[in-house]
Image (cartoon, rainbow, N blue to C red; front, side):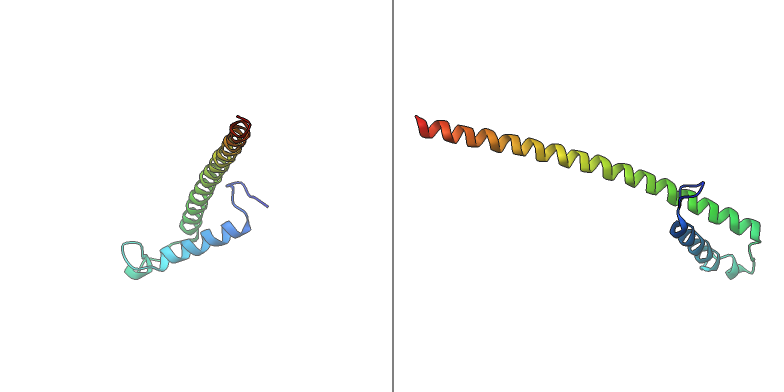
Length: 96
């Protein structure tokens, strides 16, 4: 099921993992490396921002995929039309 920010359970899990990774990683991102532990509110904000970013990117990628599929379908249709015309010309050439 998709939540408010456009992510399903897997998306929320990934966002939480990314948030933990950023909090644990080396500087400049590593808050623990410099002795600062993020509070829960900060952690939730970070997870929310990451989740929104992932949701937005996913939406853009889904839209791109749809556009590419539509272009591919149009190209296939055009190719089939050209092949049909070629076959008709071949028949007419044989008749002459």
